[in-house]
Length: 143
Image 1 (cartoon, rainbow, N blue to C red):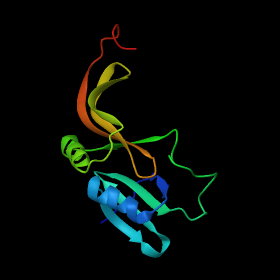
Image 2: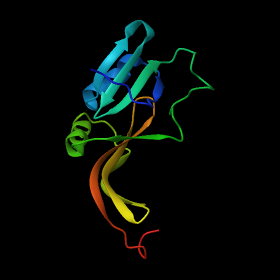
Image 3: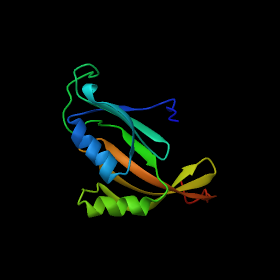
Image 4: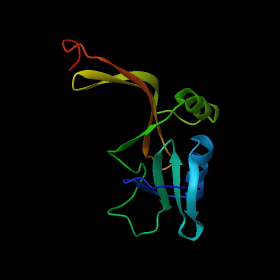
């Protein structure tokens, strides 16, 4: 049974069908449910959930122009980042930041991620990340 997360971002999109095609067929999201008359869908991937709704004049707090979502990126945890990355490349979809390993300091440890970034059809920045584990932090080398 579907259980909604405590926090689910809802993205205003310019065309629900274009967004559904992108999220479901290129990124392998699952359609949890949709309300076709409202042009709304709730989608999920590995526990991450996003609501998408075609622009309707109700949720806007200002003028929407592409790219939407300036100033935010959504990190989405995945289990097989290479498979997802290869499918995106196969679809000739533009990669914003190529796949690479990054290690981020968190207190006295480093947390590793293999990650890449793309923008969805409306310009929302999506960062896909696969956990690489943790390692000790050499405090002299990392700030």
